[in-house]
Length: 294
Image 1 (cartoon, rainbow, N blue to C red):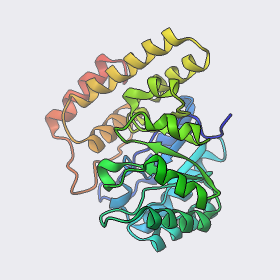
Image 2: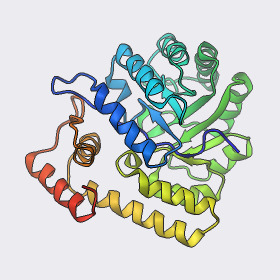
Image 3: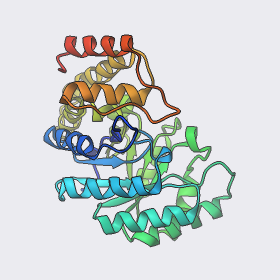
C-alpha cells in the first residue's frame, strides 16, 4: 500500500483583497478537506497558481501546509520553476518546512532533451531528499513525460515515487504503474476508470471544493463496490459540471465556491486571471444552493 494514494485535492491559493496570500483562508480550506476525509494535498500546483507566485510566497505556503496538517495527511509540495536552481531552492525549503513529498513540472518554455530533463529532476530531488513526483502537464509545459523519459528519470532519481498524470494519453498510466510508480490521475472525470488500470488516486482542482464527492468514489472502490463507485463518479462529475457552467475562469470559480461553502473570502484568480462578475457569482451561489452545498 502506498503512502500517497486516495484523494489529494489540488488546493487553491486564497488571496486577500490586496492580492497577497491569505494564510488564514488557506488553513481553513485545508481543515475543511481534512475533515471531509481526503488523504493529502497537491500544493501550489496549477490550481494553486504557483507560477504566478513569488518564491517567497511558495515557501510560505509550504510552511503553512506542513504546520496545519501536522502529519495527519500527506502534503506534496510543488517546487517547479523556470530554472533548476530555483526549483532546487524551493525543494530544499519544502523539506525543511516538513512536507511529506515534493512534485515538479519539467523545465518549460525552451525545448530540452530527455537527458537535460532527467538531470533537472536529479538535482531538484537531491536538494530535498524527499519522495519526488513528476508533474506531467504537457498542455501547459509543452513537455510530455513519456514512458521512455520516465525510465531515464527513474534511473537517476532514487527518490522517484510517482507522478501526477494530466496528459491526454490515458494508456500511459498502465505503463507507469507497471514501473512501480504511484500514478495519480490528474483528471477528476476519469478517476474511476484510472483506478481500474493502476492509478493510486486522484489529484485535481474540483475535489478541493467538494471533497466529499470524490472521497465517496475512493471509499466505494476500496470496498469493492463498483456500482456504488460508478454512481459516485457520475454524481461528482455532474456537480462540478454544474458549478463550471456558471461561467468564469476556473481559479475564480473554485475560490468563489469555497468562499460560499466556508463563509470566508478566498479572493479571485491572480492577474492576469479575472474575477467572477456579479452575475456569475450570483448564478454560482444559486447553483450551489440547489445542490445543497451551502
